[in-house]
Image (cartoon, rainbow, N blue to C red):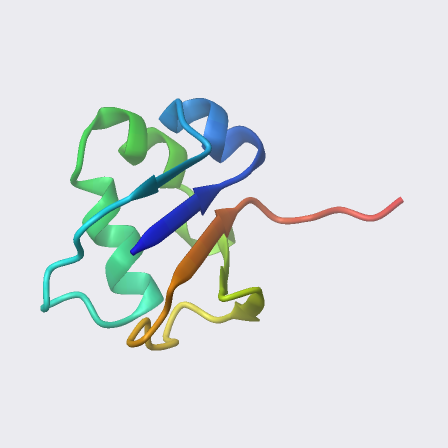
Length: 83
């Protein structure tokens, strides 16, 4: 699965995107975020404010309870501000 990171999440993780194998036990966005937080300390720091993390599956914004089944790309980013 392709993961894409934006803004300060990208900076803290140290990469803009990656291809990873997700365990079968991970089926929702929230479970994915929790799984990634266990990868290493940089992911933990980047994803620690879990409640504010925003996610898009195949370019469509979703909530943390959304299924990741069949997703080809998941984008993870901080809250967006207008102005």
